[in-house]
Length: 163
Image 1: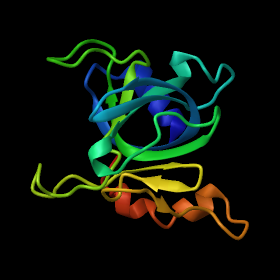
Image 2 (image 1 turned 90 degrees about the vertical axis):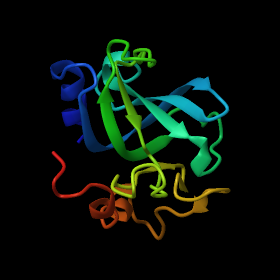
Image 3 (image 1 turned 45 degrees about the vertical axis):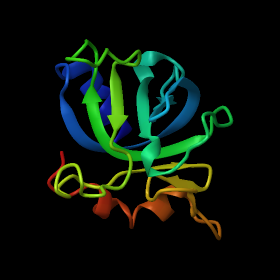
């Protein structure tokens, strides 16, 4: 899915939106606000820390606290809405990465009648965005890789109708 997301950054118009899942590495914290934390997430490639290979992950702190920083190169998995953000749109400025991941949390149903799919962020063995309060201590165990652990969960987060 990373290659698809990187292609969307280059080939889609501003504000293009699709559901997606990515696996990458934490590069740095871009901004910490009372309501949201913004991170740069590298999706790989030869120049892994370049904006061309990165997306901005926007985490809503209402759905559980998240540290404002992680260890450099921490493995991150995220599922949510991909949005091309290469120019300002209404009250939103363009992302320095040219794309954002948003709605990476559960849907409490009070904003859209529960129609929006749930999302998540997984960093270093902790699952964020699933409840208020502390993150759940969940993740790969007994020698299972991150992908082996996440694969059974993905159908819940990415409906088959997603591109």
